[in-house]
Image (cartoon, rainbow, N blue to C red):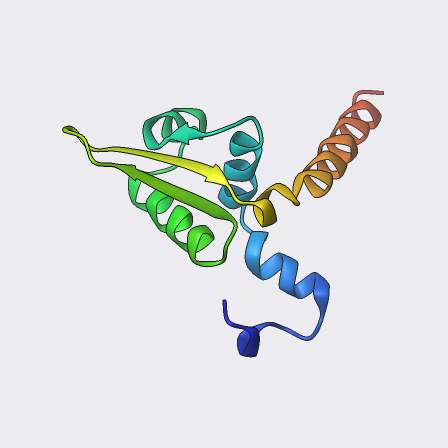
Amino acid sequence: MSKQTLPACPVETALSLMGDKWKVLIVRDLLTGTKRFGELKRSLEGISQKVLTQHLRIMETNGLVHRKVYAEVPPRVEYSLTELGSSLKPVHDAMWQWGEEYKARMER
């Protein structure tokens, strides 16, 4: 996303970058460390290969994910969070905490 296309509202900016279920879950998985495509696919139950590929490419373009390709046969590709992507940890943690509190309230 270029600077010219960023929304004026910071919340809208964050939502435009991360306002998708799969992107949030990709960040969740990459917060624990580098993963290969297959690991991410297995962890994200219900995501298609096409959608995962699209989201990883978008997140790479937006500077959140780093893609490293190894020159081997068969090719090996690993994904990790960039420094900017890792800065989403407090957001993820806040969502986790809120989700825990919500579940606890609903179970009463």
